[in-house]
Image (cartoon, rainbow, N blue to C red; front, side, top):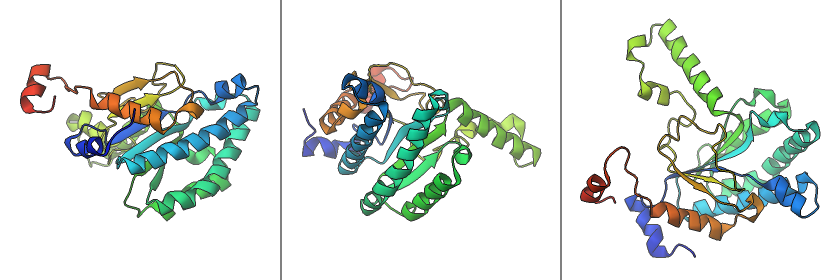
Length: 255
């Protein structure tokens, strides 16, 4: 099953997502099934990520946010964490030129201060190089956690109150939304998690209040362009009510 040119045009009617977020799960299990080291699965996962980014560009999706390394991933074996950091550096070195040529704008979210100086410099260079691009915004979550995100938003808001820039009685959900990561983007429309697990794992927990959740048993290295299109088709069939009734949505012509 694939999306036709007619289906792509429906994106103007919000039947395809503006903002997709993905938890790329299953690299290690993919490698284990093939009697390979876990690092082989992570390398295969990078190839899949490249294909899905290209698919987002082709489908004219506004933003893609991927969970590359969570704040909880530091708990993994030291050797695996070290290998992931090395892969992160090499992937940036090999992929940034192609992303730039495709007009992809790359942004990193999370607490990058925990990374090596070399990696932090590469992150800054990547954002500077692609910052003026007009195509897909690719957000890479590294050392990120949804609870950390909300906590740092609260800290920024508190600092504004202390400086007299904001009154505490004026703090509401909209104010919080303006201070979490990705505040300038539409809230995620579609969440995809591969690998068979059915949880969001502390990913964008404030931003995904009304996100459609799509789970697949496919391991991330096996998640190809056709699988991504199937997720988009599933999303196009959803009725997004945002608290309204189905009848209200149908009467408004968006059902």
